Length: 155
Image 1: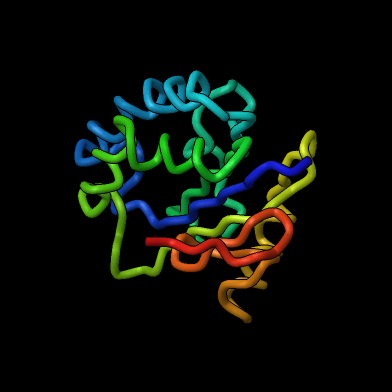
Image 2: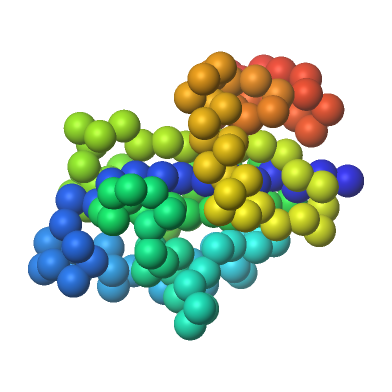
C-alpha cells in the first residue's frame, strides 16, 4: 500500500514577523489543523514545538525559502484539501505572501504506507524533478502518476 507525499517550496516575500505576513501567519495553525482533520490526511512536517514547518530553519541556502511536506492516503484526499477547502483561498492569494519571481517547487511522489519523507529525501526528489521533469518517481499536478507509475488522465 502506498501514500502520496507532497512538498511545496516557495520564497516568502518578507519574514513571518513582518506586518505584510500577518494574515498568512494568523491562518497557519487553523489551516494546518483543518488539514490534520481532513479525510485522508496522514502526516505533516512540523517544527520542534509542533507548529507549522514554516517556522523551521530553511534547509536551503536562502533563509526566506519555506518548505511544507505532508503525506496523504491518496490523490483524491490531497486534491480535496488543496482545492476544496479554506486552503484554496491561500493558493489563490499566494502572491500576497510569496515571491512569485522566484520559481516555487511543488512536487508529489508515492511512498510506502508508514514511511515519512525526510528533508534529505525531499531535496533529492526536488533535484530529480529539476533534472528530468515529471516522471513516475516525482511529478507535479501537470502530469500525475498512480502508485504503480502509470500516468493518470486529467480533464
